[in-house]
Amino acid sequence: MNRSDLISKLAESTPGLQAKDVELGVKIILEKLASTIANGSRIEIRGFGSFGLNYRKPRDGRNPKTGEKVMVNARYYPHFKPGKTLKELPVHDEK
Image (cartoon, rainbow, N blue to C red; front, top):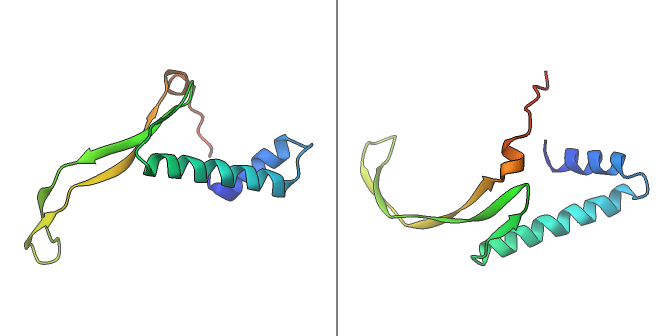
């Protein structure tokens, strides 16, 4: 599911809201999540999961084209850890 699919499904399930209002709400929530994580804070949504940053140490890597050794710098990367309730949900194949 991509962002526009999410907005469409939310708009269908909430007939009292217009699609543009749902789109604005989704945009605000995603922007706030991104800025909070980028500032180094952790976000926890009970029953869903937590978002945060993990640290990856500097390391030696290889250029796949030439095989030459290159140094890969240290960096922080976003990480999502699902909550217990989300982990226990049954999975349905959409075929």
